Amino acid sequence: MLIKTRDDGFIHPVSSEITPQRVYDGRRDLMKLMATGAAGVALAGWASRDALAQAAPGSGKLAALKGGKSAVAGAVTMEKVTEFKDASTYNNYYEFGTDKADPAKNAHTLKTAPWTVEVEGLVKKPGKYGIEDLMKLSAQEERIYRLRCVEGWSMVIPWVGYSLAELIKRVEPQPGAKFIEFVTLADPKTMPFVGSRVLDWPYVEGLRMDEAMHPLTLLTFGMYGEVLPNQNGAPVRIVVPWKYGFKSGKSIVKIRFTDKEPATAWNKAAANEYGFYSNVNPNVDHPRWSQATERRIGEDGLFAKKRKTLPFNGYEAQVGQLYAGMDLKKNY
Ligand code: MTE
Image (cartoon, rainbow, N blue to C red; front, side, top):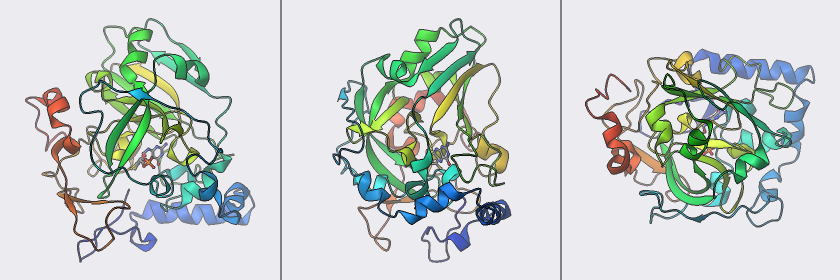
């Protein structure tokens, strides 16, 4: 998340460039944890560097999860799909470390079964869903979405899931429900970086009700025809393709309907840098770097020309009307 643009204009995941101080502090905390053996799980991950090979699609390590063709407008792009090995080894999942390679090395400790998602707050039908039941609640579709990270890189990923709206309709929101909060797992036993001061755990994200109901918002269980690898947010995450990637919370345990705008993890950490809306917007710079261009992971070399970032990540025709009349500079 917090990576500085270098003078030469490249956004580069060099750990020494990660700011602010709390990230350094977090690293120091991890070192301390390791010294005491409490983060043995992380060390075990580093010891087996073939974790990546194990997760190759079709390798038989991940269960197949095929999605049908989606009829939702904007759900498919003709752009070249990012290679699975890039999408599953270059990740942001801070519970498992702040380097892009950390989640693939460390997230094997995440226990994805049994898994329950609790639906609570302002709904007529609150309840707990076992992951298997949640997966069967509606037909799984494949959606090929661009994911644009706030740091300035992007990928094109074939996700598998169904519109979050299907679940929302099922639980019947009360009239007062204006927002949805997504609470993700924060288990210090299996997530070596939870307990560090990088973020105020658990990682929480949120959407306005109409954003959550938009058919493009995907309750996601898989990618590349298989269930999600742990590092990509197994067993269930959100993908909101027109917003910066950090809005797409991983490994969700609670979906809460509320009348107040949820306090989200990155907004709490740096409110002037990460707003609640975080719609992809080439015209609103991050305070420390431009958002006008992006680097497509895997496709372009680090020194290749960047692409232009599109308003709403290219989904303006589908979602632009959600923000009619809003000042998107103020509501960044
Ligand atoms: N969810 C949790 N729980 N923890 C995280 O650190 N990182 C976010 C988002 N969801 C994050 C998270 C960020 S910054 C991005 S860009 C996307 O996940 C990355 O998703 P991917 O690794 O599947 O590409």
